[in-house]
Amino acid sequence: MRSRTTFIGTGVGRGSAVGPAVVVGGRPSPPADETVPADLDEVMGLLEGTLAVLADSFRTRAESMDGEIAEIFEATAMMAEDPTLRVRSRELIESGLGPATAIDRVTQQMADALSAAGGYLAERVTDLMSIRDRVIARLLNLPEPGIPILSAPSVILACDLAPADTALIDLNLVLGIATEQGGPTGHVAIIAGQYGIPCVIGAPGVTGIPSGSSTVVDAARGIVISDPSPEDVAAVTRRREAELRRAEDSGAGETADGHKVEVLANIGAERDVDRALATVHDGIGLFRTEFLYLDRRTAPGVDEQADRYRKVLRAYAGRKVVVRTLDAGADKPLAFASLATESNPALGVRGYRTSRVHPELLSDQLTALARAAEDCDTECWVMAPMVSTPQEAAEFAATARAHGLAKVGVMIEVPSAALQASRILEHVDFLSLGTNDLAQYTMAADRLSSELADLINPWQPAVLHLVATTVRAGLAAAKPVGVCGESASDPVMALVLSGLGVTSLSMSPAAAGAVRFALQHHSLAECRQIASVALEAASATEAYSSAVAEIDPEVRAELDIVS
Ligand code: PEP
Ligand code: MG
Image (cartoon, rainbow, N blue to C red; front, top):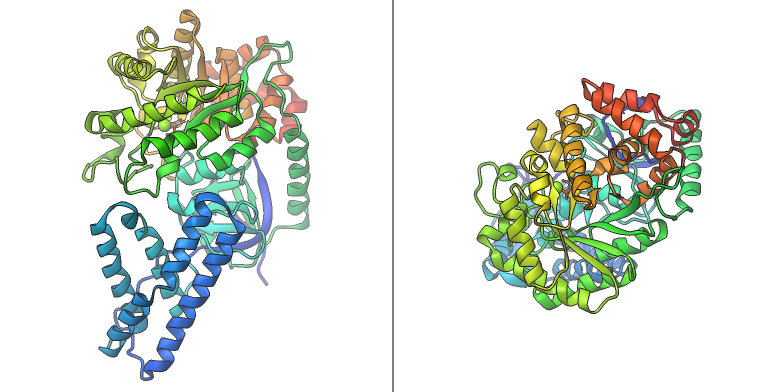
C-alpha cells in the first residue's frame, strides 16, 4: 500500500486543487534495435488503427473548443488521416524497418518539406511532430507525450511543458499542474497563473506519482501531496470555497481608507478576456501579445493583428488596456522574430531590442494597434518590453506616437532602466515594472531555473530597492508606475508595493480576489509600514517574514498566509 508523500517545489499563485494524477510523458524515441515485424498486414493494421484513433481524438477535441485552437486540432486530425503517412510508412516497413522507426522517418521527412515550404505549411510542423510522438508512444506502450487528451478533471504532472503545449490546456479539465523543472516566472508558471490553475513548479519526483492516484497541488505552500489524507483534502476544499467567495467581488482596488490602487488583469490572448472580465473590472494591465503568435513561423499581418487587438479592446470599452509590444526571445521564442544563433538569448536581441533587426515587426504592430484603438472607445496604452536606456525609451515613444498612439510607456525589467527611471520618465507617460525579469537580471539568475528559485525572488532586497527607486521616480514626476510581474499577485507583496506608491497592480485574474481583500483590510499608512520593514530587511526571507508579521492576523488566516 502506498502512503502520503510530499514533494517540494515553488508555488505559482495561491490556489490549491485535488484530483487524479495524469503523468505527461516526454518525447519518445524509437528503440535503436526495434524488431522488424513478421506480419506486415498486422503491423499496418496496428499503425492505421493508431492513426485513426488519434484523428478521432483530435477531432473530438476540436469540437469541444472554438476559435483558433479548434482549427489547430481539426488541422492535426486531418494530418493524422493524410494517406502519405500510411503509404510511406508501409514502404519503409516493407524495406525492413520497425513501425516506430518508420513513422519517425516519414514524419521527419514530411516536417523537413513543410519547413522548406515556409509560411502556413511550416507552422504545421509542431502538429505533425505531436502526431509522431503520440503514435510512437502508443506503438511502444509509453505514456502519452504532451498534454494528454483528458476525459475527466485531472492534475497534470510533467517534467516540463513547452509553451505550445500549455496553449492546448483544456481549462475545463485541468485542475492543477505540477512540474519537475521550470522556474517560478517561466512560461508554464505564467500560463497556469493566467488561467488560474493551481500550479507548483520545480518539484522533483512528481512524475513518479502513478497516473490515477489522488494528488493535491498546493501553490500557497509550494507542495504536491500524493495520496493525501482526508484532512489534506478537506483543507483544499475549504480554501477553494474561500477563493470562490472572494472571486465574487470584482470591485475596484482600494485600501481600507479609500486610497485607490488599480487592480488589473494580465492576459495573453482573446480567450482570456472573459475570465478577466469576471473578476477584474478596472482593466488590463498587461496584454502579452507574443502569446498570440507562439506557434507561428511567419509574422502576422496588420489586418489580422488589428482584428485580434480590437476584440480585446472592445471587451474593456470605457476602461484601460495596456498592450505590450511583442516580447520575443529567450523563454518566449517567436520563430519569425528571434535570432537563430545567440549564445545567451536572455541577454541577447530580445524584447524591444528585436526592433533593431526587425523594425517592420514593431511598426506593423503599432499600425495594427492604432487601427484597432481608433475603432474602440477604450483607453489604449502601449508599452515596450526590455527597455534598457532612456534613449531606447525616447525612440519607442517617438515611434509609437508617430503611429497615432497617445499613451506610451515602457517596462522596467532591467536594473539599468530602474536606476534611470527618472530620465526615462522624461520621455514616456507611464512605467510598468516587470518584476519577473527585473529579478532575473538583478540577481543574474535564469528565471527558468528551478534550482535558483530562491534568487529569482522579488523579495530579494536588491530587487525591492530597484522597485522602490522606480516608484519614487514616478511619484516625483507625477506619472503612473504599475507592477505587472508575478509579484503583484502575491497579496503580501501587493501591500508592500502599494505602500511604496505604485498606482496599479496587474496579475492573473485568479489572483485579484485575494489582492483586493488584502488591500481592503489595510490603510495606506499600514501599507507604508509594511513596505518600510520589507525594505529594511537584510534578506529575501527576512523581508517576507517581517512584512507578514505586520499583516492583520485575520487577513493572514483568511488568505492562508504562512511565513
Ligand atoms: C516581467 O518580466 O515581469 C513581465 C511582466 O514580463 P514577462 O513575464 O512576460 O517577461
Ligand atoms: Mg518580462
